[in-house]
Structure formats: C-alpha cells, structure tokens
Length: 348
Ligand SMILES: C[S@@+](CC[C@H](N)C(=O)[O-])C[C@H]1O[C@@H](n2cnc3c(N)ncnc32)[C@H](O)[C@@H]1O
Image 1 (cartoon, rainbow, N blue to C red):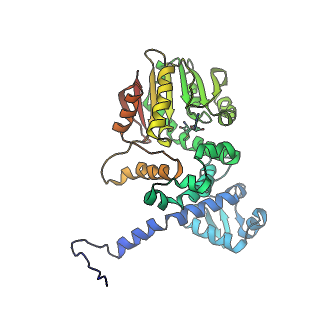
Image 2: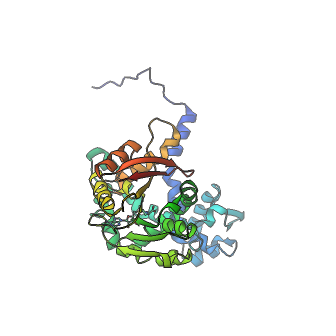
Image 3: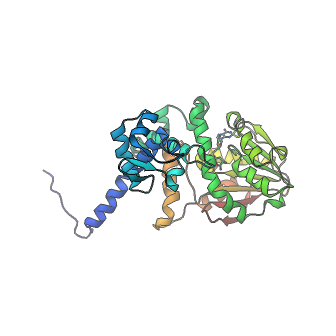
C-alpha cells in the first residue's frame, strides 16, 4: 500500500490563496457568461435604453429566469447594470458587446466562445501527447477550417480588426512610416492597420495581401479611411509568393500563428520581394523570461497558439532574430510600443 508523505519544506497556501486559485480556476465562468450574452445579442437589444428581462427574453427568444441570472452575475462585474428589479441597462463594458459600434468586441466574444473554447477543451491532449487541440476538434488546421466556414472566418477577421485597432495608435506613435513609398502588408487581414498608416501618411501607397476570402471584404475599411485610391488589394498564399516591389513590408501577428519552418518560408518570399534598401517590420508580442505577472499575457497567448493554431507559438526576441537570419534578414532594432506589441525592424 502506498503511503502519502507530505513534504514539510513546501508551503501550501492559506485560505486567501485558495480563494485566489479558485478565481483563476473559474475564469471561464466569466468568459462563457460574456460569450452567451454576446451570442444572444443582449447588448444590441439594450442599445435604445433599459429593458426588463421579460421584454429582453421575449425579443431574444430566451429563457427569462436564466437570462436574469446571467445578467445579474455580469452586472456584478460591471458588464450591464441592474437599475431596478430585473431591469437592465448598458455600461461602457457592455456597450462594447454591441455589434454596431466601431471596434465591437462581439466578434471576439463569439470567436472565443465557439471554436476557441471548444479547442481549449482539448488542451490536455496537447500537453500530454503533443497533439493539436484545434485539429482534434475540427479535423484540419485553423486557416483551412476558415476557408470552409465563411461565417467563422468573417468573425475571426472582424475580431482581428477590433483587436488590432487597440494597438494601432501606439504603433503609429512609435514608428515613422513616412520613410516608405510602397508598404505591403502581408497577411494584413481586412486592412485596419494598413489603412490607418496610409491615412496618416498621405504620400504612401499600400498593398494589402491576404487570402482571397479575406481581402474581398477589406473594401469598407479602406473606403472608411479614405485610402482606397492608394491601396490595392492582392490575394494569394504567402507559402507560395507575396507581392514584389515594396520598400516596406509589414508582417503583423502572422508569425506567431505558424511553425518556425513556415515562418522562414514566408520571410524568404518577403526577402525576395523587398526592394534594395527596404525594411521589414514584424509586429509581435515578445516572450520575456521570469515569473513576473506582466509577462503572463504573452505566455498565455503562446498556450492559446498551442491550442488554436497547429505549429503556432509566441517567441522571444532572440527566437525571432534567428528566424529572420535564416531567411536572409538581419534585425536592425526592436521598437517597443505602449500597447506592448513590439516592432522588429529587419533589413536585407
Ligand atoms: C492573426 S491574423 C493577423 C491579421 C493582421 N495582420 C493583424 O495584425 O491583425 C493572420 C492573417 O494571416 C492570413 N493568412 C493565413 N494563412 C495565409 C496564407 N496561406 N496566405 C495569405 N494569408 C494568410 C489570415 O487570413 C489572417 O488575416
């Protein structure tokens, strides 16, 4: 019979620590509550003013008492506010879940609540057996899944647009894009970053490169920024080629979704396309060593990549530098930005 020995040198936490751990363990209760509210469209329904859960349930075809319990819980976290018994209104946080506001977070909530949550349910298999949770859940890599599921792809691209919008100001504040004449954004999604750069620098021309089903939906964002006459879209596969002739290339949040071999291949095509004296700007969050809580965001995103994007991983500056070198680039400098995303400037 096995006896259990307690190692006295290891300090177990107290009740307060247990409370902190419980908060971490139940983190998905909060995110799933938000995702359900987003899925139902509660915030859109409250856009014109407070409503009772009875009216909400009727309009949203939901179960009144369970909807009340969900909103009561979220209201205690600052998302929605209960004005009087069973009557709710929007708060600034809840307003971001409306689908009709600029940079709506609703697509982020839907993406996280659907495929991302399903894949995370299989995270154990990744760590135990090295399997890809997304592939075991959906039977194919993520970008192949998106080409076959247009609604999910649309949500993903809108989510990316909302997330990148939050970093745009700090990227623009940290780097002088005026030195370029043609900027090519490789895997640029719906063009939110490129259009905000072109809007700021009126002499600059842009090329937005992504898969056909993605760039086909970019026009509203380019038009909204008033840059459509200076920005052409090109579709293709960056594992086969990228548009040639730019003196500046952007590769933003693409590399962390792919394996080292795949990233080197993309970088080699960019290297071929980049004109003499040009620069590549890779934008990624960098993994930092140590246990500091500030390093947790990128480390958790790295675990998310392990779960969501087969082969994907976040990397340290040194790891990105090694990939750049293998594709013929040298890392010139790393520019930190206020939002935390780093700009890695590389030259041929
Ligand atoms: C994580 S998103 C990043 C989007 C944008 N650059 C940003 O910073 O928000 C990765 C992008 O790579 C694109 N992508 C994935 N595989 C691709 C391929 N084989 N060829 C071209 N683009 C691809 C996706 O469609 C998506 O827009």
